[in-house]
Length: 334
Image 1 (cartoon, rainbow, N blue to C red):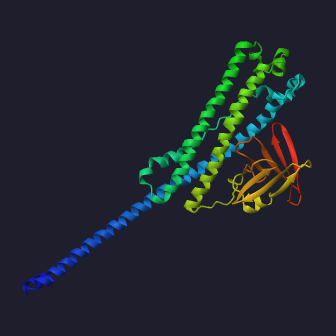
Image 2 (cartoon, helix red, strand yellow; image 1 turned 90 degrees about the vertical axis):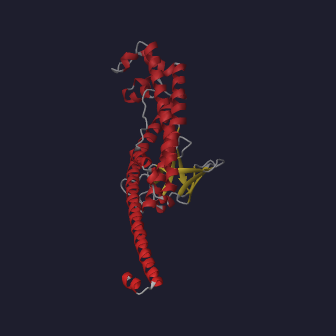
């Protein structure tokens, strides 16, 4: 065609035809580049989605760990309250069934988080499609800020325990006999009457109950929020499963807990639901958020109590029990 146009001296038509060919070639190249770019974007999207799925699985593992740690500290709270209030006797310590009394300040349960998926995600941060960017700040808050605090108090509680054991080893002949279960009067007298032992218990309480436990609770709450956010972003199922039933509850499960609970002396606790968040408002106290350990067991982040809801044979909630400081206060639903 170009040769015919040139032969007939139709230069203008030749230029137009040649330009059209060039435009078609360029268009073809651009289309090919666009297809290639979209293919690369899809590959990156699939890769990041796969990594986030791994992060979500690891979050479920960490959340399960926190259940055991929170209950571990709930038991500690009860024992520490008995010790500091002077309610334990020599007979209590001599009773072989009460062996945990000797271990109040000598056992540690560190929270070791799982972050392989997050580390993998950070290695791919430069290739991340824009739709994932809003999630990064939430994940950084968990894996950088929350994790740093958890690790700090992991070290602190271990240090407290190590110092107590070192003190016992240096001061008491009976220390070596604790390991084989021998119980001497001097040992029992120390645990019951020595004010410096209560100082040790107080130090343990401050680090464990007022610092380590709240950081673990914070991590759990933020881990659940990230688990749900990843599910929403990837279009995954966020409904309760066998794996998630201890931290994902349906609105119906939460709604049945709402109501006013009283103990008959003018003191009551109102349980309400707002945006799928359970709230508790005790008489004369500020409102606090309650977070699930199960469908009927809840905790608050900055207080050591645990609330257990009770139901009758018809599945109706009839009362709640507040466990704190070795006490169990039952309140009836009005």
